[in-house]
Amino acid sequence: MFENLSDRLERSFKILKGQGKITEINVAETLKEVRRALLDADVNYKTAKEFTEKVKEKALGQDVLNAVKPEQMMVKIVHDELAILMGGTASDIEINGNPAVILMSGLQGSGKTTFSGKLANMLKSKRGKSPLLVAGDVYRPAAIEQLKVLGEQIGVPVYSEEDNKNPVKIAKNAIQYARQHGRNLVIIDTAGRLAIDEQMMDEIESIKNAVNPQEILFVVDAMTGQDAVNTAKEFNERLNFNGVVLTKLDGDTRGGAALSIRSVVDKPIKFVGTGEKLDAIDVFHPERMADRILGMGDVVTLVEKAQEQYNEEEARRLQKKIAKNQFDFNDFISQIQQIKKMGNLKDLASMIPGVGKQIKDLDFDDDAFKGIEAIIRSMTPQERSNPEIINGSRRARIAKGSGTDVQEVNRLIKQFDETRKMMRKMTSGGGRQALKNMRRR
Image (tube, rainbow, N blue to C red; front, side):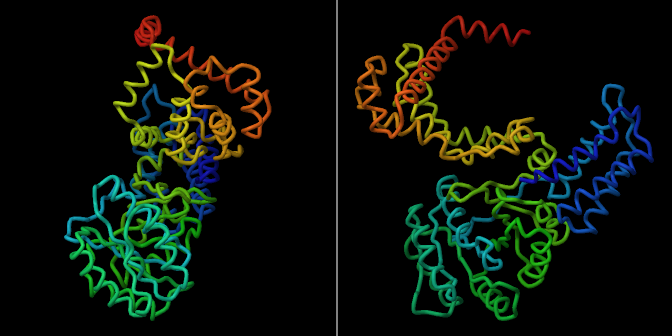
């Protein structure tokens, strides 16, 4: 995510390295490179120009403290301005109606249908809503079926009228259906086109006027860069939408859409899609995104993802088992499942400050745990609960059952034993005392 932009910005800050103070000359040289980096990232030209002018004004007005180096001061100013450029603070959505209505808009291929499922799943699990998905795309043959598959996966009903080709009537009927069946949130998936045309715009405008949605979200593929911003401008002129959704932010994204769209249409980015899975959706936080663009990681989001999988009662139970040296392969595989639920491994690792740059050229296999899981699932329930009984013949059987070899099984059991010893040490009195001593230092 934004790797090229991050690299270019980092190189531009190096111009100030070793400088004793910020001057008009070295600031101009630095910002010339910053502007080039933004333009190469497909940021709107006017936006890039205004951005660098604001940074220059703030940089030349700063008194650099003795303890702060000029390049550090510049990074701080650019960071703050990037956050402001992308909206400053996170924006919530309005879902207080009964039912609340969210209308999805955007071009074909932007990911509206998939995102509708993701949003329904998020608002159901995290906000306690009872969503109804509405199949309003009457032109694309697979759209209705796709939405039904998504709805089944997340346990959310889908309203469709397959013989009705009038999306306005379908939307109105769906809201009536939601009221009758106790659904307090309606998410309407609409048709897109490969290009903007009057028929499409008239149709979605008619749906808007008919159902009076609390929220209209414009869904855009983040990989389309500047084209996405131009499309957003045209949609906004007709629909006056409430916010933007950037999908496919986990792909080869240059960053132009995320950095330009707020300044061009003056509407906040509310959500981002970060993967194929139905839980790969995040609220957009401008400051955190600025952190990631500048290679500072995103620890807050990482912690939030961990907390979503964290169960306090389960943690206490696990701590007791570790203290008694009873941590087993059932617990081990349970922890693996929790890590996998947090999302893409490379994306998670890049949230750790300083790690993103180190791993940018590495391929992270999201199936990296498959071999471990296969080995553990090839064990009998008794072997998982009592790892000590796994002797040579059992290891050979486990290897055969998991499609691995005995060396891999031996390696996993050795790593498991070392992990268990370390965990027990950290929960013992000596481990707790060591941690206290480290804090004092």
